[in-house]
Structure formats: structure tokens, C-alpha cells
Amino acid sequence: MTKLLRTGGQRSAASDTEYADPLLSPDMDDLVVIYNRVPKTGSTSFAGIAYDLCTRNKFHVLHVNVTRNNHILSVADQMRFVHNITSWYTKKPALYHGHLAYLDFGRFGITQHQPIYINLLRDPLDRLVSYYYFLRHGDDFRPHVRRRKSGNKMTFDECVAQDHSDCSPDNLWMQIPFFCGHAAQCWRPGNEWALQMAKYNLVKHYLVVGITEQLGDFVAVLEAALPRFFAGATQLYQSGHKSHLRKTFNKLPPSEETIARVHEWDTWRMENEFYEFAKQQFNLMKKKTFELQEGYLHERKQQFTYEKIRPR
Image 1: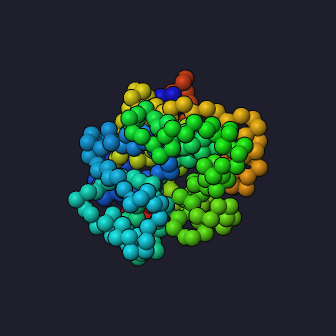
Image 2: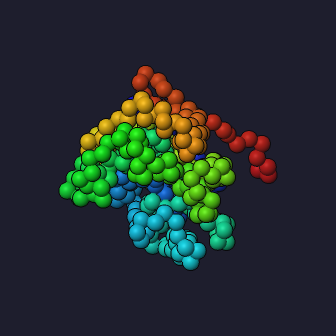
Image 3: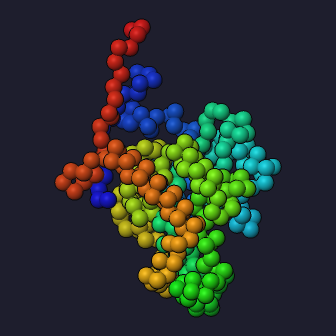
């Protein structure tokens, strides 16, 4: 991804009011965006961009901190969470982020003004390797924090060769359940129903799901689709201050032997299928959003018009 240029103003179809961009109109001030971030997918870097933009673009960013790092909530807490987000008007517009499984607000009677979901996915083996070394060596974001596996020098290759629990096939099962949701089946490694539900939710309930390996393009698509929040995000990302905010220390790439063995796991097959599915959706979305001209990404002009409007 190189550089993004935005197109000019448009007239709102709903009224005769003309805005520089209708996606920046006052109607967008009640928006709530939920970024239920998957661990070790570049989420800290992206959240940092949101925090840097919130004052300039006049929206709120709230971190959802779940007790003991649980990724699912009790039914009572689900109800509280839904109520808080939909009725906390003084904190709108808002972007909520946290390591929390997808939650369907429609199940709680919310039929209008539902939140917009966004997320990032990463190559599943790369994500697992990054998390494995992160627990042992930490990263440059908070280098002085002592991690849970600090002092353990076993490499990922050695871990896989010894069938250690820290790199078991079950540990690869992470991105699918985050998109599948709070159902018990979502968190059972290798569950085919969970894979299909994750795909369904991604297409049905998420506005944009980006790819960590294309983080800059994800930022650009969001700026085009949600300028109320992300106007200026591309320039901020390209400035370099947030592009590599968090880097895991002493991370070693897995050997070919280790990769071959991981590829035999059912959990890898299913997580990789989900990742490739998401990548295909994102690349099509990016293609329909931008066109490349002379090294610059230009947002495509509006591709529809209104005709034969009756009565006049």
C-alpha cells in the first residue's frame, strides 16, 4: 500500500444538505464501532492509531478490560455490555476495543443502531509463533514487563518436536472462536460448525476485516468507509510512528520441518481456511474501493447515482 488520495464532496441523497463528505454528516455522530481484537494480530498498533485520531476527529475510544483476560462473558454481563454501549450517549460516537468474542446485539432486542464491527486477522501460524515468543521475551511496547513464561528459552521448534502443551494444536484455535462468538461450540478446537459460523459472521456482521500483513491497506479502507472516525489515518500510519509500534523480542522463524508438522493439524487447516477466506473478502473490498494510479491509491468515485425519482 502506498498513498491515499480522497475524492471530493457529494450531495446527501437523504436531503438537500450538502456535505464535504456525507459520511462525515451529523447523522454519523451516533455511531458505535466495536473492534473485538484478536491477540497478536497487530491490534496494539491499530488501537494506537485510533487513540491518536480520537481528539482530532471528535470521537471516544474505550478499552474493554475483561476480568482474567476471559474472551467470553456471562449472559448477565452480555446484557450489561449491550445496554452500556447502546445507551451511553455521552460517549458517542465511540470505538470500543478489547479481546472479546463477537456478540450479536440482535439477540438482546437491539434492532436499530447496532454497532459496526471491524477486526484484523493474521496468518495463523505466524500469530501463534509471535504469541509463543511474546510470553517468553515480551516486546518493545512495554519492554520492562515480566511475561508469564519469562526465562523459558525453549524455541518454538523444540516445543513442537516435544509435543509441549505451549504449542499444542489447540493453541492455534483462536481467530475462529473470536468471530464465531459466545457459543460453547465456538471454543472447541477443530469444530466445523464454529468455522462456518465464523465465516457467516464475518460476511454478515463485519464492515471490514483486514489482514495484518496488509495493515496499511486496512487503515486506508477504513478511512474511505468511516471517515467520521478514520479521516487522516492513512497519513498517520505512513508517518512511521505507528507502523511498527509493537515488535516481539527474540522471535525465531519456525523450521520447514516444524511448518510441515503444523500443517498436518486439523486446527491449522481450519484456521488457515478461515484466514484465506477473510483475505479473499478483503482483497475484493480493497479492489472495489481503490484504483492504483502512478503509485498512488485513489479512492474510486461514487459508483451509483439516483434516477427516475418520483414524485418530484
